[in-house]
Amino acid sequence: MSKLVWDQAGQKLYETGVKQGVVYPQSAGAYPAGIAWNGLVSVTESPSGAEPNPIYADDIKYLSLTSAEQFAASVEAYTYPDEFAACDGSAALGTGVAIGQQARQAFGLAYKTIIGNDLTGEAYGYKLHLIYGATAAPSEKAYKSINDSPEAITFSWDVSTVPVSVTGKKPTASLVIDSTKVDPAKLATLEDLLFGTAGASARLPLPDEITTIVTGGTIAAPSVTILPLDDAASVAKTANIVMTFNNAIVQEAIVVTSAAGVLVAGAKTWDTAKKVLTFDPTTDFTGTTTYIVTIGGVVDVYGQTLAASVKNFATVA
Image (cartoon, rainbow, N blue to C red; front, top):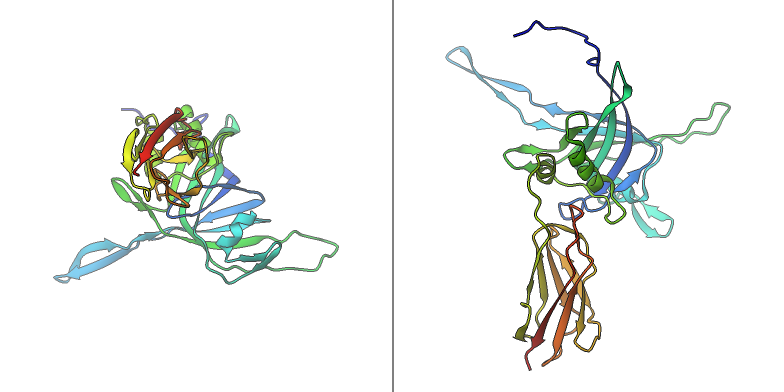
C-alpha cells in the first residue's frame, strides 16, 4: 500500500476543444458513409434520467429503483454538409431548391476532443466520441443585417438518440475511445474506418465491431460462398446469384458475363449487414448457357482484400 499523492507532474489532466466532426447518415440500421463536418463549433452532451425512484413499505424506504438513462446532445456549427440536410428535415425539389418540414433521417456522429496535461499540453492525447441513433430536432436560425460589428450566424440542433445493442451490456447511444489508453495500432485501424482511406469510404462501426478491434479479437480473412455452386449444371433460368461473405463488405466490382463474354445486366442488393449480395438479372438467363461470375475488387470493413476468383454455372435447357 502507498500514501495518496495529489497533483504529481504529468497527472494534471484537462479536456478542451472539439474538432474533426463526421456525420454518418443512417441506412437500414447501419452508418455506411461518413461526411466531414466543417465549421463544427460545439457539441454539448446532455445525459438524463438514471434518477432514483424510492419505494416505501412497512413505513420505511423499502428500496430504490433507477429510471432509464437517456442520451441527448446539442450541436452548434457555422455550416453543415449537404448530406446533413436530410437529417435536418430538408428535401430537394431540384438542384439548389429545397423544402423543409420533411421526415428527418437518423444519423451517427463522431468528433474529437483534446486531452491535455501539465507537461505536454494539448499534445498529450485525445478522445474519440461516437454517437448512434441520433435525430435532430428543428432549431432556430437567426439571420441579422450586416453592421459595423458583423458576425457569422451559427446553426444549432437539439439531438435525441435511440440506443444500439451491445453484446453483454445494456444498449447505448454513446461510446468514447481514449487515445492515451488504446493500443496505437488498434486505434489506427479504427480511425481508418471512421475517417476512411484511399481504398475505402469512411463509415461508423457499431459497438460490437469496435470491441473486436480494440480488444484484439481475431479478424477472419475475407471469404465467400456462392449459389449457384461453382460448376453447377441445370441451374434454373430464373435463378438469382447469391454471394455470402464472412465479413461485411464496403467495396466490390463483381461482374456476371456469359461464356461468350457478354455482360449480364442486373440489380445488386445487399442485406443490412452488408454480408449477402444478391444479383438479380434484368432478364432471365438463357437456357443451355454457361455463365461466369468474376468476384473481384472486394474489400471488407477491415480493409482486407478478397483474392479475385472466377465461378461458373450452366443453365437448364
